[in-house]
Image (cartoon, rainbow, N blue to C red):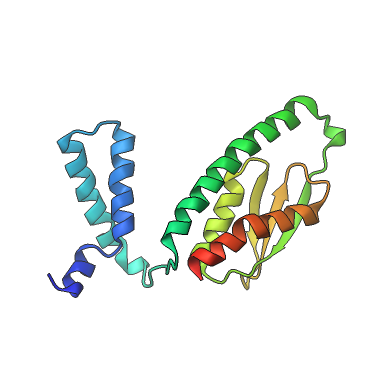
Length: 167
């Protein structure tokens, strides 16, 4: 098969694979029929939405994406415990909710989206807004006595890694 035909049938191979896996997980069955229907969805959805994806995201180091996902899962677990402790044992008067402005070094829309999603998935923080020019992200932190430390933590822990992956 030529490269052009392969691109038409599989415009986004990673998305196709992810759709098959998610379908099997949603159905909670690994029978032949489930996998075949997942493959059909994995082929048809990317083909029908290809016009909305004119440029594929460039992932420079895909193996780093796996380590990034492990880090995010770990941080979600830790943040769940921290938020539970805040809710159970900290008085409202002692909490320090803050808005944190995070200047972005990222330029790739996919990387910025992944950063905003990571922040929102981590309990205790929510991505609220992206500046019009894409140069800063506004984040609300549930309990941040030092907003600069939250900003520096997000930049060093997440943004730096995403920059290595996407740029």
